[in-house]
Image 1 (spheres, helix red, strand yellow):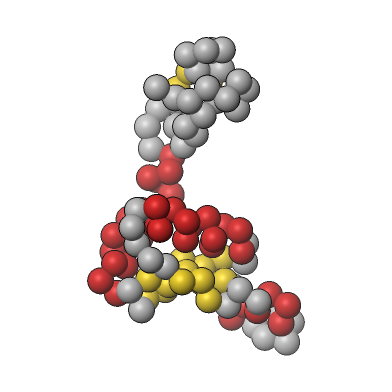
Image 2 (image 1 turned 90 degrees about the horizontal axis):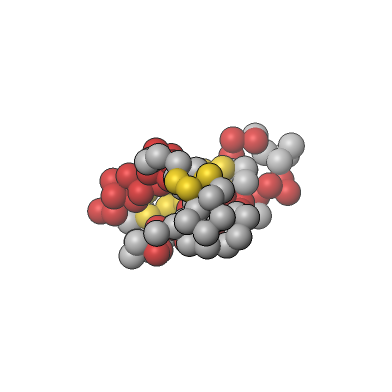
Amino acid sequence: MKRIYSSFNLAAVHHAKNVLEAEGIRAVVKNEMLSSAMGELPPAECQAELWVLVQHAERATGILRFERWTEGAPWRCPACGESSEPQFTQCWRCGTYRT
C-alpha cells in the first residue's frame, strides 16, 4: 500500500477517500484518532492518512490533484444567472445543476 494524501483535517481525508471510491479505487484512512495524541507525539505523525494499493497510486494521485477540482472556466446558472466556480456542479443560490 502507498500513502497518497495526509491532512490534519479528517473531513478532507474522508472526502478524498469518497472521491476515489466514486472512481472505483478502494482507499483506507489511517491515523484517524491520533489527533488526540498531538503534543505527546510530533504533529507530523498525527495527520490522518489516505492509503491505496500501489498499483492504483498514480491514478489516485491524479484524481486528487487540486487542478482537477478547479479546472475549467466559471459557469453561469441557466436559471438565475449566478456565476459559480468550475468545481461546483450545482448553483449555490437556487440549486439548479450545471448543464
